[in-house]
Image (cartoon, rainbow, N blue to C red):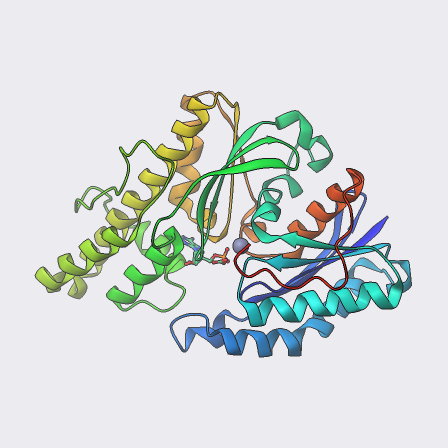
Length: 338
Ligand code: KG4
Ligand code: ZN
């Protein structure tokens, strides 16, 4: 069975071809350079870029997989959550394809798909997804920070999420305060690698809070005041590196502590993580250390699959097909707040 999947929820136009649990191709056209000029994603520009890029990206994915459109057995696309103008391009194009080819269509929840990115590569493969249930999944990106309890496949619920800024947003806003280009997360990661994470003490918001929720806007504000009161930190590379390392450590400590705590409380044996911030080297290494200490199996999405991609959309759609889920109506609309 061959499935074509489309992802256009934010600033990445992506199409993937999946066959029997295997990703034959994933093409991602990123708009980061376009939005960098504005210091963040401009929704209107994102929608226009998806419109221009989707068909070439779909053709490239089919060529790379050596698949013709008449061989496709099912189509999937992100239905939400995401930017309305961006979602509508991918969803309507995919529904159009499904209509033209007379094949089933699956509208996919972007967050639910993120739960699958750690399983796409690595061992055991996604076909063994069942064997690692239940797990606690951390989804951490520029738009979201969520802890999810995956009880069994296709059965999961959100334990907590951010009450204000997402962790990636915090990285990006702090980077902006320091004068680093967008997106700031990778820049902070790079500078932090040569810095001392104990140099400056920043708050660990909601670390001791009993809930599984997160909050990062106070941390960003405390960095703002710190820079206001100590402007000289921006004039020294070493101090800048120390600042980045200290902020990064505050974010990472909150994410890792709350994830592992939830895993212990719910007595699961596996932790997974995905989303753009999971590219962060300090987060990956802290999760590895903490999980090892608590005898938890850790599955981190491969870096190229942490950020938004259609492979995760396709893998989830295929699992839905295998579980005999009902296809989504071709008349269904985008669900930006899903
Ligand atoms: O998942 P993603 O590509 O898009 C969404 O936000 O949905 O995540 C992008 C976010 C940005 O905030 C970016 O700064 C952050 O992920 N990010 C990182 C790193 N790489 C990407 N944050 C910290 N360290 C990184 N290495
Ligand atoms: Zn995402």
